[in-house]
Length: 294
Length: 288
Image 1 (cartoon, rainbow over the protein chains, first blue to last red):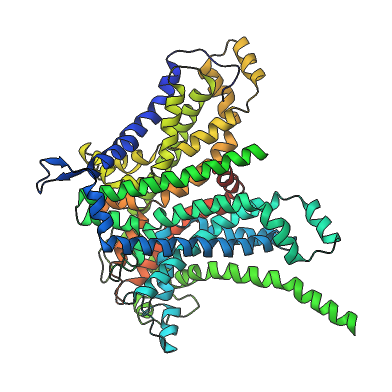
Image 2 (cartoon, rainbow over the protein chains, first blue to last red):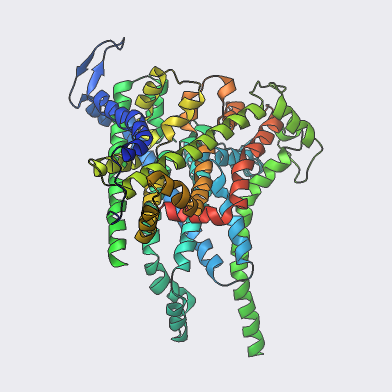
């Protein structure tokens, strides 16, 4: 799309674009190309020479049973975080949208956790669920339930899922509320006059009309669970105990930064890039459709 | 009897949403409350695990020590005032930098016609698909080769390109009426004059809304500062907290850690609460 009336300077537009394009080339395109290059090369131990090895790095990554475990952890983690944070947010948004007293106050009190860093949210949860200093962590042990997410892998996974979801509810809440407020009141009132119950009105009118928002949030939350939760996991469990909370992004960090395996880490980065590109493409197909209908 | 019962039932039904919402509010407030309370007690009380639910008397002492000093009883840390300053610089440079370079590139794409226009547009657009997390190692190498480790430039510039901000401004610029541009041209105003006198003032709300979102984005960065900063003087406060916790042994300076956590939350939460209207607009608009 283009405006009809424009300015006709020759050099100015390039100057205006220069900073953004420079940053993009140096810090986005070039490193991404490097990742792709490294993913099909093998470096010798001194990093002096590298050899083109086709897809060996990918084969090595995908044949590693540890990597497949990481894929499984990531799947469980992302699905749980997405379902939990969206479910809770939708419930709260529907209630806050119904014309009840104090709706504005509830809104303010529910959106501020958006401001917290994922790592800070994780630290707050640690203060509560730490088996030694946390109020609830100690209570669980006093009740005879052996709770220690630092030793038990399943408890660790539960803990990072809860902390990551807790932080994401406010984001989903804001979008669900905006989506709900866009639904015409007249439709709901007409259904109400026809005698449809609140629950029936929700499932036959509200929920279908909310589907663009739901779909949008689905993609955003999966991306969040894949990447931004690095801080949550790093602050709470460092991927452990064992590898029970190691997600794909945590493993890229672990292999590339801690273990210094460039080829393997780059191959993993390229796999992640493909996933993000696929998710973005899905999202844009959906945006196009939305534009088409409106 | 029947009418009484149904009136009571209706009142009960009216209360349910409030009960659920209050429960929701409490689930979000409770961890913050515990942290606030913890930051007013001494480390020993917290470490023994019997933290009371009411404030203690160590508040001023804890905050002063965390803010100024480099060592607690058990841990050595960067003073929080230095980490807060680093976080503030990082958040401001990222937010203002993203806005500045995005608004001028959107202006170029929307108000000019020139060769390779769409190539540049797509190049910027592609950055959406390359979050810093998927290209960390090679980006780190680029920054290291440029000698930017442990500098503010290394901390901020690689995060400063923004496809979403560019798309948002471009979308907005396409709605500026042609008559306005024609009038400006007849008055002899050039492209830069039009940008400063008309486009910038019109973009005020969009800039404010984006600023709130991007400030929080910048303040909350984690993986990138973790890689690019080694020296304590460059540490940001979010990283600082997890470094202070270390491996999470029970006997540590929990009082200082909790005070630091409260301080780390304060600026972004204040920005959201004080600029709520712009914040919601910025969030919903920039994701469209």
